[in-house]
Length: 250
Ligand code: IPE
Ligand code: IPE
Ligand code: MG
Image (cartoon, rainbow, N blue to C red; front, side, top):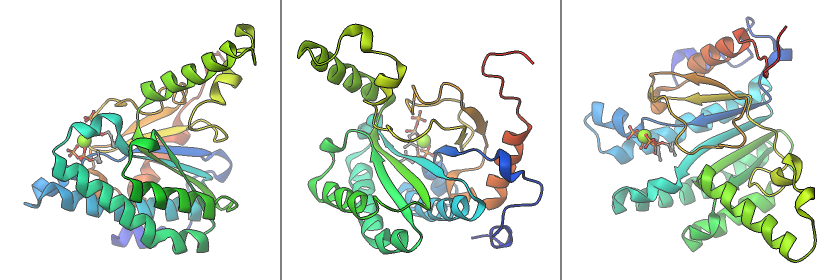
């Protein structure tokens, strides 16, 4: 944590508590480049990225943001070298095991969104355990997108709905946006108001395609391991300057 981070324990005075995003989504990008710049292997960037995420979650709680979703592993990330994929799966499992007690103490409800069936069984077991144990916590909704792909999510929802139609449980006319959302991994969580992507990349890389329809997008050149409370403060200031019109006129 930088000096700046420790100073920002409370919501900065220039932010309007009433107009905070209810839900912040982050594409935690740039771990590999951060490590390379330090002359370290890519995996060291992922390790540091975990510390950033832990502080982001704590910061959201400190500042009164009710939901955080972090993109941890995309359906496309399987295409990375096997050693990196293996490292990430092991890292997720270890961090989850280590942090469960802390999440209970901090009243965090954790969920995982994505196709969890393809994850290693030992990781799946930790995921199940953490979701069940924290299910009644209400301090903050923390979603981790793991083996997540927005297109894959939409296709699996279509399949589930088509099956219900085929079984005669619903009619095609019953399909509307709200029914559709019931079949997404994110059901029950409001859409993100703010999307933050680190490392300067200007794309959404298959993240929350449906849910992002009206999210405000904030991109910073900072690499994820260097993202801190001061950076988050800047993102929230930018968010509060935005005029969210939702297609209307004033
Ligand atoms: C994001 O950092 C973390 C994951 C995708 C798991 P990257 O690993 O994509 O880092 P860069 O973009 O290569 O620097
Ligand atoms: C997006 O980052 C996925 C995660 C942060 C988990 P990537 O690094 O995989 O995205 P691209 O390849 O730059 O689009
Ligand atoms: Mg990347």
